[in-house]
Length: 118
Image (cartoon, rainbow, N blue to C red; front, top):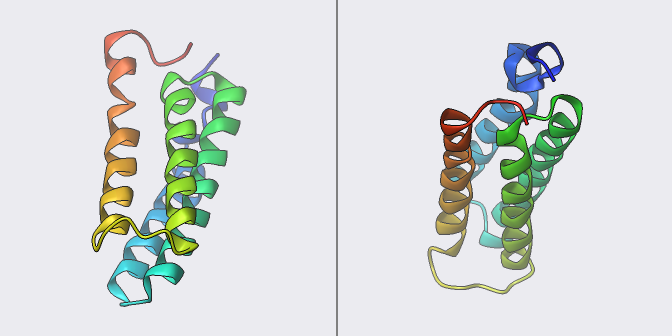
């Protein structure tokens, strides 16, 4: 489709859908909250960002959003399990958040190889 319907290309919607949740998540990490609380917050933030990606994919067919939406939902699932008490080690939350964000960033690579809109 086009950049006109792409939320990621608009600074205001990109800020609201992805930058604010990331800022909240990183701030949460600095507050020293219990693991379950921090994991629950990250889970909700990943659902928010994943929903934004999938809705954007339906709106403008952006290739990155088709990939990053499910990545964020997978990150939300794992962080929800951590919030429920299924600890996978002392650094499980940090590793999960980092891995999810790296995969979301890597989802821009197919756009560089093929094209931005499917």
